[in-house]
Image (cartoon, rainbow, N blue to C red; front, side, top):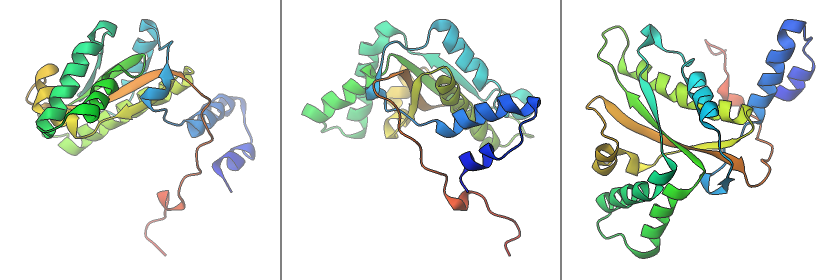
Length: 207
């Protein structure tokens, strides 16, 4: 039985109806590539709402091992220069169409956020927990964007770990650029997502 069918068979007391409606929205979420996102993007107030959603990610001892940067609209061309520098760092021989495509990626999506992971020095919260928290925070952002009616997608690749990126975003020694999130209005309707794989949930110990 699919998750949608399960939900349709659940009795919904008043306290659960709203939650089930949100679950159905979550189940329908699909990433939309930044090149397919057009204006309008979220307003400044809506961006703050997205970050507020991110702040509710699981966070042992409230270390906030993540932060976000909004790429200003007039910073897209400088960002394209950074993307080019990052690609040249990875492949000094890059040129022509490949280089143009690398630059164009900085111009996609009306709203672009950079997600910064920052591992705090704390004996009680291991690094893997803090990185998981940052991952949860970015997941909350793309989900919240969908709930506001926008399309969104997290994009990364090898370039986010380059020195060109580190310098451009002035990252501290304990920080890494985790990814970018493109947000905007979908140029076309999203399709139905596939049902989750059956191996996502098992019982322990195995029978």
